[in-house]
Length: 507
Image (cartoon, rainbow, N blue to C red):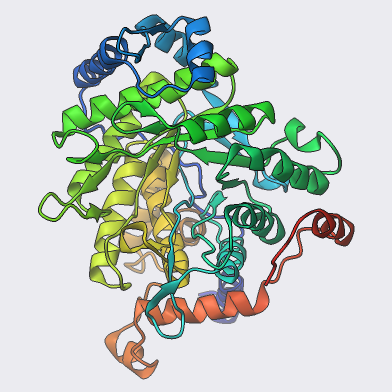
């Protein structure tokens, strides 16, 4: 028998190495989705045909004059009632000429992600007006300080691929200060791909000047845009919003990639029947696609069709449940069928506390969207209270959830090596277990994702450690990150130039 001492030393060394974290994430962002298909192909075609009929026969209402001219030049027609008919040929031209994949650039090139195809990425979104306070565990109005803290917190989370501002800084006195200080918070605290919103079109050019300062000079941002814009140019049912349309033109002028978001609500601004809802919301998002194509063919756009649901008993928005899960999964499936870059929404739990309802609703909705192949899954980190709230602790809990989802998407690799018949023979005829075997050690580091926060101890160990809840453990991790992670992603000269040009209210 061999000397056991080297074996113990080897185990100790491996234990130390594992405590430092795995060298590679066994299931990183960008895993393939698409195995969950709530709609047969024939139903997808039926819904798509219905959407085309809506756009051709009913058309779009409240079309601004500038957009009407642009659409007519591309092949749309004004109807006698003033609405604009969009023919199927123009829709299909837009689909064919829109990029099927494109990079979401990050200021740090290593953090750039390629979107489209069958890859799945979780990110953020939302416009929460309330934040779940870390000390009182009660909701209060969101502030600019919260936005800075949320941004630097998620900067450390490996399973969040991009960051969109998740809360509204309610302490900003006007829309201009809100927009510029939101953009500054993103630049200061992360180098991931980011997204923001522009309240008015006239805010776009000066904020792009801020981006140019950070990127290295006039016009530098447009060459490699590291911020995308979230815009909702269509108001359900089937009409355009003038201010948002103006913002689309301004963003395209500055080469800003777009997420054109349709956010109809079943039973309120769209049919309560799920099929009817999917047809109308698809038509509305196709109208946004045609608009972008008519302005600038080939401009990158995330086809962000986000089905939302209301509780038909009360009329309140419902962010969690089976209906919103299957609707967003079906939306992802339809968009991917068309070959476009898909954006859907998930994890919009109705829960106010980080409790069982929170976990169940987030897990169900985010997993369904990922399995269906949503390329970009928005709202999936940190959001609570049906998008009214955002939570620091939720961000780190959701990061663990995303890790598990990516592991599910990775699936099972089957080969002679992974079947390990020789290892089975050796264990059965030898020591009777697989602990410490070379295949086990290799699989431990290659195939298993170990959660940072989930408790896997015995009840006794859990009790002796303080009987902490997931919320408690998440709070401790948030405290540690915010106490230690203070990035300075804007150099001093650029920061001085920005502060000379803008009223920066940095906490």
